[in-house]
Amino acid sequence: MLAADEKNNNFIFPMVVMSILFFMVGFITTMNNSLIDFLASSKWMLSFSEKQLINTAFFGAYLFSVPLSYLLNKLGYKISAVLSLLIVSAGFVLVYPAVTWGYVSFLVAMFVVALGIALLQIVLNPYVLALGDPDKAASRLNLVGFFNSSATVAAPIFVALLISTESIREDAPMEVRPDASNVQIPFLIIAGISLFLCVLLYFLRLPEIEEKNSTECDAGNPYRYPHLLLGAVAIFLYMGVEIGIPSFLPDRMRALGIDSIRFCGYEWNGTGVLSIYWGGLMLGRLIGSFVLRRLKVRRAIIFCCLMAMLLLAVSLLIKGELSVLLMLLCGFFNSILWGSIFNLASADLGKHTKRASGVICTFAIGGALLPPLMGALQQSFGNRALEVGTSVALSCLFFYYLYIVLYAAKLSAIRPK
Image (tube, rainbow, N blue to C red; front, side):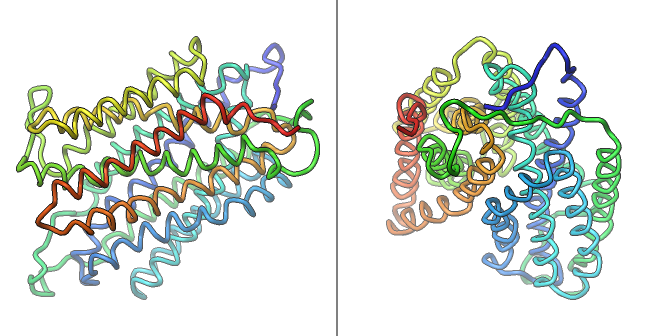
């Protein structure tokens, strides 16, 4: 396990730095999603499948997480973080000419950005786990996860302030369609911020945590440790849970004939409803960062999964606004799962922790693979059976939750003989 002497090091400052970087990861990822509708209505005139290639290009970079983890192992945490920010900045600079060259060039530029984000993710998670008491590692990871989640609120606002993202009818004439080049300035601003953070981080004095060999896992390679590989599978399935609910909730509402719901005195409709889900995720991570300082990680995972399963089950059995609200509430209980699973999967790996981070992050590709598979299952019932098809697709989440419960209860404790 990574170890650090809290008596000789003050970890408050590096935690502040990590929180800023986690915010940036969430901001950039969400900003891309916020730009999809704008690009689809621009003069590029993207089809539904073409505009989804933005997510494909972005999540596809995580398939390179394992080779990127070798880079982390060689360069160390700080230099790898500096390099990741430099790559992000370069990618956003490339966007400027890319949007004038065409959509394919834009996707290539975004893939470069995503490589930088993937490397930054690989660096941040194990580094935060290492900053202090190992028993409170999950608490720290959920605290910085709160800043990551808060970026999902800030990014759409940023995009809305700088460019118009109002929908344009598909049959609108070309001359009234927005120009795709309007995204150039927002991306250049992010490039400048990334470069500033890159330079600042280079000159900051951050503790370079040294891994100590574990008495259990001190030889071989990380792939021989069952709790790591099984934990990577848990991350894969968790991404299906996190993305699955907001992906299918609009169809669920449509099947129930619900256009909007009233919550906290406001009327929420369209994509605004999903803000409740992401807001619950953000709030849950903040609360979880305190709760996990006292509650065992395994127990917290099991409790949250069981509560989410109960809410989902009741939601699918009833109709009306309450059904929607219960499903949205699942976001609150999903909140601590990423950080807590990551903590269990990387435990007792000693010198292999950096490479293990690459293995775990690679399996985040579940967020890009599982929802389409669930969508294919939904579609097999046809449009006339939208409610049944959507319910069956959402029922897949029960299997994902059950595996995560099994991992927390039993599989995470398996060690090589």
